[in-house]
Image (cartoon, rainbow over the protein chains, first blue to last red):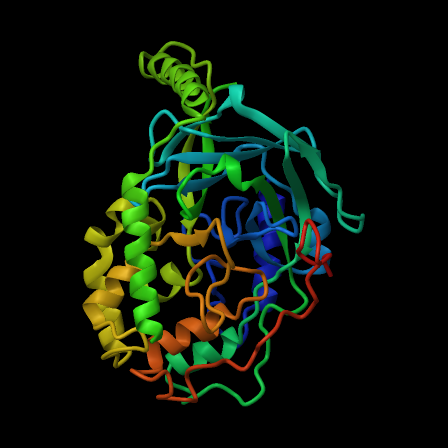
Amino acid sequence: MKKKKLLLSLAAGIIIVSGSILMAADHIDAPAVTGQASDITDVYVFRGQNTDNIVFVANTQGLLSPDATANAKFDENTMIEFNIDNNGDAVEDLVIQCVAKNGKMKVYGPFKPNEPGTTSYLGINNFTAQVDITPYGQPAIIGEQKGVKVFAGPRDDPFFFDFVRYSQIIGGTAASFNETGNDTFAGTNVLGLVVEVPKSMLGGNGSINVWAESKEKVSGR
Amino acid sequence: MKKNNILSIRKISIVAVAVFTLSACQKNLQENENYNRLNTETASKGTPPFAERYEQRDQMGRPAINTVFVGAMRKNEFNTTVPSQMDAAFRTEFVNKLNAFGYTTNILGLNADAFAGVLATDVLGASTTGVTTFFDGTNVLTGRALGDDVIDVELTLIFGGATGGSNPGLTSDNVNNNDKPFLASFPYMASPF
């Protein structure tokens, strides 16, 4: 565990340019969990190839070099939870919980949690689908059960931003962006988690609010 | 025109959600609720819990909100504040940050306080009936697709002034695409390097 964190910090360190602290989208916004399995880098929500479905993406462990990617693993004590508010009050009405267990990513829900907020209980009665976590260098393995698709494994970081130049602007050493930007996230990977769900499971009346949370197991089996 | 579109979209959704009620899923939801309540009660009594309990460490709705608007001392706090309380807890800090950027208004016609109010509740709106995009010239905040240039949208909203045309050197980072093409089908994201 510690070794993994060390490798990740090392990987992040190599990419830190000119002393600027690398952070963007939500990359490394969380001092308490930076570089850990619970550090969410980005969230995406969009309709699927089948437009009756919505796709939820949460990426973690940003700025992985190819070498570091081979060693990156989902942490079995970290839950990634998609929170879905379907009545506009910014309180979750449904959650989709994702937890790695024995080389598989397991998906629970969407289901209504007993209580909203920062504490969650694994919805073991709401198991929906699972998939083998795709090893680095292997074709994507896709799980599908009950109409829910799931993928978990390394992916190219879809985020793009000239964060180095942005940092220079904010730091007062540059006045504007370059005419040709340089994608700070080019060539780096994340651990990707993708869950595709039929819209009929999400409730709401035309729109939902979504946010992703990482949560750490503090008790239970 | 864009402003009106956005305002009307927001109003429509507020009205729509007000009349929405759960129906078909009610029974299943009730069963789940009972189950979860049992676990919660068991856990709170100090007996060996049946359920795995998890505590929050990080959260995110829209891109770069915490990164840009929350000061270093409060980033962890932002990550564990429930979204329904973010506005009350963080709006002032967001207004101060906008003022520090020289912000007065934007293409949505929002003053600093109103814009901070939109930003501070860090949830990502998504349409379940139409196009899902951060901004495509017509639709605003109806989701976030992999290829959306969210940074340019946010830079324009912060630095672009009433027309979006102010500070042209600050409203685009001039990185417009990912370094790998996305996939048309599941899992959509490109294979790793």
